[in-house]
Length: 502
Image 1: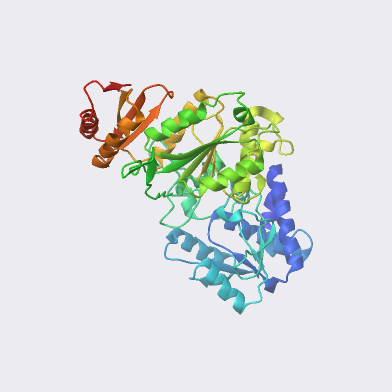
Image 2: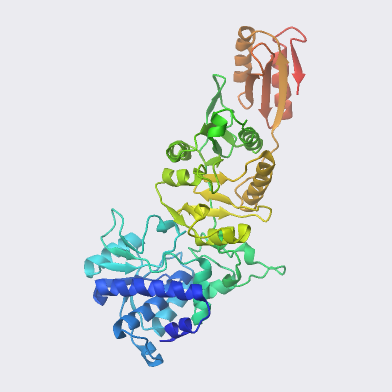
């Protein structure tokens, strides 16, 4: 068969290994189930296109028990093929799918229902026990899956068969180009991961100086495969309490809320002073993110998981740092994985990145850093980052171990947020501070009145020492309003009782 022949003649040892493993999974499935009991879910994308040709090769190799001649390539492909067509499907995907069905004489079942409803209808009408899927580790649906995985609770019962689960972006394109098979034309227009017409655009990383897009196979970093997927972030308004006083303003004009988690026994023991959390809170405040909580936890998987679990559901984003690396105490990534209830799994592309970074000392068998939370991890890259940020849904794992490293990671993070349209431009935050040596009880009531009079401002207080001055801070967008609030407070006391300070 032409597919098997092309792989056997290839010099790509890695591709040969991936191919042989996938064929083994397919032949194993065909030994467990009859052809009438299996189906193939095809969506016209690159992954399912690879799987189609692996199934063609696997079926014919299974049927013959030996390598086939090119004459056998024309045999009818008897495995039922399911295609879910929707109004949001790209026209090019539809055209490619129907053209492919015609070329390879696919036995097509077309459903215009959603995936779950379509499967329920199909399985009621047919004795299907297993479905071949083009799922790869890193896909949102790959969490917890093996090469053979029963369907999830609440779904119709069937066995999910995933022959290319361990394939990378590089492997997919190596196969398509080596075997010289057709794929959807969108991939030659800069699309690297195709969803619906509403959430997919060409990958900007493939745009050249003439604003033309290069083909998808020219994307050098497969970890950025989904960079063309449009993302939308929303947040709920926040009401907060500061110094026991309710403020309508508080940080309600913040677009997002965040929690900060430091990991380190050395911080809890007082061995070192944590400066990163202090700087991070300040930077979040300056971009109008409201920090709802900051904590320090032990270098312990369960402790980290418990803290992340509490914070990720009540904040737009959680920033966690410390405990990232190859040492026995570096268990932050594993703790985040446990918080989401997913396993740690080898990430081949991250392993390749680490091997490039630190040389052959990094191997898949020994390097724990190549283990990442399965199915929820996105590596966030920037040209100024030597190590990418690790994003697990709404949890950002920072690798910074010093203030200088944090400064660099933060600048890159903000740059990426702006380029993705997540960080909206806001008016600069204006603040003013007053200092007074008046007793607490004397200033409390007048200050409460000012807070009620100026609900559009954030007004808070703090001390640097118990016997020191009280610092009153006014924050907002309007310089005139801040000045008016400060002046109104000063008028409630004797002249020079309050003075402006830095």
